[in-house]
Length: 126
Image (cartoon, rainbow, N blue to C red; front, side, top):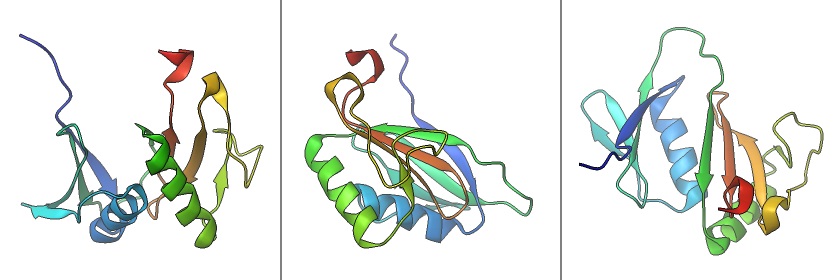
């Protein structure tokens, strides 16, 4: 039997807003309600299931491996909308992207304060 990642639950201040934010920026289908969740389906069948939390949420990190065309569309949307972004996880290079391992990468925050990352080449180039 193989082991594959299927889903995770992401705590959000506003599950609909956060789910739509990510889905729209990454060009994914409109999130769908599933019980108490708003589910964002990724291309590989994995879902990110947003749920509202009544407590302060520490920002978590979510990284996405995307194609060059998805990255181009993402960075265009980020810049057009004035969404703060960085080339690095520590925010030392605002308004920039990185070119690690011959690809491109960017970091940005979602409406709930989670740290999102999009890269076109996996770290280490593999």
